[in-house]
Length: 446
Ligand code: PMP
Image (tube, rainbow, N blue to C red; front, side, top):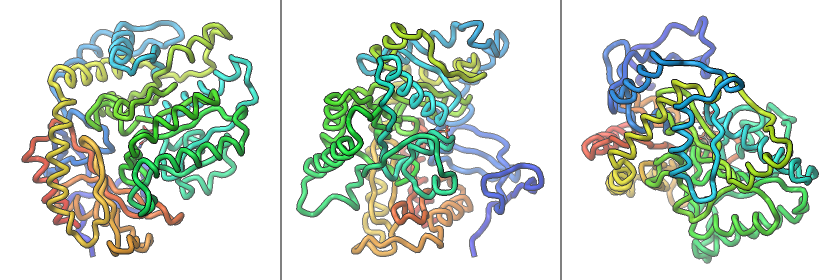
């Protein structure tokens, strides 16, 4: 039997929890690297919730900025007004964005960012007189959100299955999954070239003139435990998209905003997408906020065309959310936290290697910056997974919670490709001692 967390909410009567059959501890406060429940038990946050809390919890400067904004102005609908704080945040995001990106479209979270990017791509082709482009190409083992459009581009068949038919046409191709898919006789570069060739074949099958966009997480996150691209892969993808006039949409909702050691993960791939989604670390969990960053030429097509993006949500560009995000990003810049992510990331990698390289149930350890995944296997030699019915990832999470550690579990799906993974995405403020404690508690849980 599993040990269960100390204080369990008896609220299943009225709250429609995601997991209706499990009790959850009641969180009452958060400070720095930890959350505390109603019994006084503390949990070391090794995953930032879901790669969200990049500055940790209760940061005094973010709280102060939010309070000040609340005292000044909370809500001004974007059909009537813009706000100084939204403009300032947009300036900061464009000043730090890859060259060519000129505009920010604010939303309230990751799925909304993906939906907005998909619709922007669709309308872009209508604006430039290519309305026949109706197909998206995305990748298997990807996660882009739970709203219907984002679910359709997501590459986890199990999540999509019961919601078919989905509303948009999507073809899925293989992601970069070196641990399982790179052949023994292939170099990493050759493997990347093979994936690009497969993408090219998919484009040819659909007819290049019918394809709108290729959608991918720059570093895969919530479905297959941190999938980093092999060198050259994204350059090849970018060239292919350019050759056929296809937009490249990079989803950096999870891997972006400093998580991998550069502000945007695509900087490390040497490519600039046409549209990029960000969320999670943008507001660091202090307020729901997300955004789409768009290249000037995409925005230009709307300007010269209808002059109106046919989209919008009630809360987009919410003043308090923008104030929180602005404060989070300013602290990251001022305190040099991207460099710290790289440095602590290297320390975390070394600790994980030390603790788990010889562990019989850890098949692969992979990641970048402070974004790491462990792939759990029943047998290392054959890379055989545990029976998904065991829900090993969920058990490890429960054991970790019992031991006062939050790690993010992923997997256990029936399509045979998601397996069992544990994701680590600690706040950027984690000290080396915190990282040591995280790895020690995770080892105990495993
Ligand atoms: N895209 C990616 C890459 C994500 O990891 C997530 C969330 N895990 C989303 C989109 C959806 O974001 P949200 O949960 O904020 O809607």
